[in-house]
Image 1 (cartoon, rainbow, N blue to C red):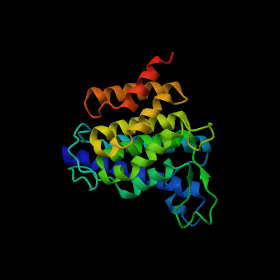
Image 2: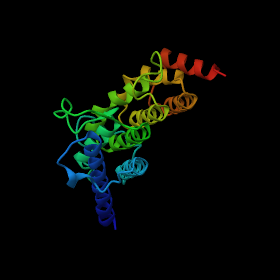
Image 3: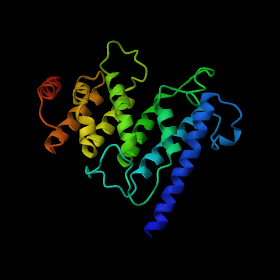
Image 4: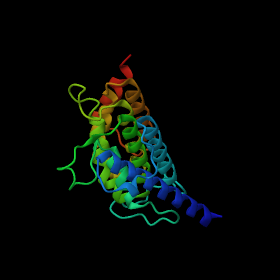
Amino acid sequence: DSAAADLWASRLLEACEHGLVGFVVQASGATGHASRMGGLPRDPVALEDAVVRRLFLAGQVCLWGLDVNNNDVTPGRQEETAGIRVPPALVSAIQAVAAPTITADAAAASSLEASSTPPAIRAHAFAALGKACLRLPKVAKASVAAFVRELSAGHASGSSVTGSAPAIRNNALFALADLCVRYTSLVDAHLPAIAASCADEHPAVRRHAVLLLSQLVQRDFIKWRPVLFHRLAAAMADP
């Protein structure tokens, strides 16, 4: 029944939380937390695969029982929806993994050498964070700037911007498009930065930017503006 399914989903999120928190602890180099390693493998390839699987699963479960097309949500409060509860520690772990480097916490940042997060893990972290934002308005409000910042890396001068992997920008773009449907007012101010993705250095990101912006215009979630028209026109004229 529904209650049993919600309980199952909540337990899945707890398992994802345990593994991702363990990864943050392991990657940050923190000591004295052997009990929090989350049963993760030590081999780098196997570790990355394990973290990616947990991020994907967490993101999918966050959508459990959620009407993602409902935009009657107030962005500054915790959404009181029936069903599963997303653990705050899980959200914090996803946010930590989405960052270019990982430290155990802010206090440890000055004493521990930061560990660079693999691009594949960051890309999946942004996808998972975007899905969590659809359920959690407060998290959405706090995360929009991070999504926009990653998008900007694709058209900044040079290509040495940290976190400029195309997969990361692509997932940040999809997350912003979803958020535009659910929390239109949160994303509207960042439309110029989103439209700039039509000139991204990677063709897949450019293509998805054109498709997503066109769909948002057709569904009346965003309005035509000069900057949007010019970006779309230039992208469609690009052979």
